[in-house]
Length: 241
Length: 290
Ligand SMILES: Nc1ncnc2c1ncn2[C@@H]1O[C@H](COP(=O)(O)OP(=O)(O)O)[C@@H](O)[C@H]1O
Ligand SMILES: [Mg+2]
Image (cartoon, rainbow over all chains, first blue to last red; front, side):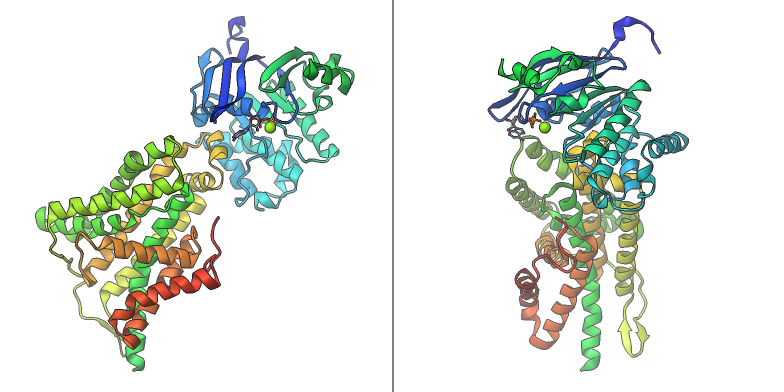
């Protein structure tokens, strides 16, 4: 591990934009994540949060630059981004529903061939989400929404990511389950994992994130300390200008 | 009469297994990409033709010529993916365009084969040159056993590949959710090329197994592709095992139609089965995969 401060930024996004056909869903965006930091990306529905995550991974055609620890992240090559250690848990989870829970986890470690390392990660993920352990041979599609989200996070962790991107992990889940998942994310972050957490609702990330970017109609409207936000009204102020 | 029926059911099973292998080839590519590959027949034709060429032009023994032909055809499957499908895919072409492109590729391969090898039909020697086995009064020829045995081995091998190997699971993941697969680091486009290689190899195996009982020529591909395609639909498109069952059903129906109605009804039987399934059970024997 290099202790130099020149590499203190794990991820740097510069002038990143993306369009669907002629519609520019993401205007040139700049943001960065420090090593070990958990940042939030907030914004209302349709603001371009998912587009931003997909653009970082290279799932959609983009312009601009993404660097990971000073190295260029190739564009239009999500598998290569994953190989660098950037892993996205996409909106809607993207689990392989007809396959078993165990197979889903196995595919998360697709790039790993060391058996012992595999066993170590497998144990680690199952101890983080013990509920998956009871369901290893069930198909992923038969899990509850919360369990599916845990599986999606667990699958991402199987690749031992350096930075984890989560696109609205709370979507469609009961408050108690959301609480549980966010608590696990906090735990992972305290263990040193850098995280970008996308949410619509600011209150969810208040306890976790030191910094948040507010996204509004495809642009970053502000960078804030979410702890300074006291109410929804105050947040709305940023969107309305 | 009973003997004749039983005998023709037997030969229908043999031909049906071949249709089934071709149908599985359709499923493998369809599952990986959503594309219906109409160049599938070219692989079947090339399997027989290249094996014949290997034996006559290079003097190779049959097993070597067959293995060589399967390898070359599998590579040509990769070439089809790289040269024809990939550029269209990257440009965001519609499925319809890509399917038409595979049909065009079929015609190109067929015509090139005509130029290179002429239009004479050829055949291969039977794999085991012994008189038919007699079982309960039925004649079972060895080529039938080769066809059924090889099909069973190929299907068991494929099932094992998709259920137990990491690459097989990764291919299934790509067919379930391509983006999510890429996010796990799975090289999606390499998996697509692999699907074309597998499918082409299956077609070649089918072509090599059937040639000794019939003949092969530059133009046998399309009829085989049509039968394989019907087998895949009858089985529930995208279901390899269903395609194989569909193939057997089709082969037996054709054989019986020939016995009872005459040879001219072979294609009528095939299309009747297709229509019957499209009307009564459009999702096929096993229910379609997507
Ligand atoms: N596949 C797509 N094709 C066309 N437009 C899209 C597509 N995905 C998203 N958009 C548009 O891009 C904008 C941003 O969407 P998205 O990134 O999903 O926002 P968010 O995740 O913040 O809800 C929206 O206006 C949406 O309609
Ligand atoms: Mg979204």
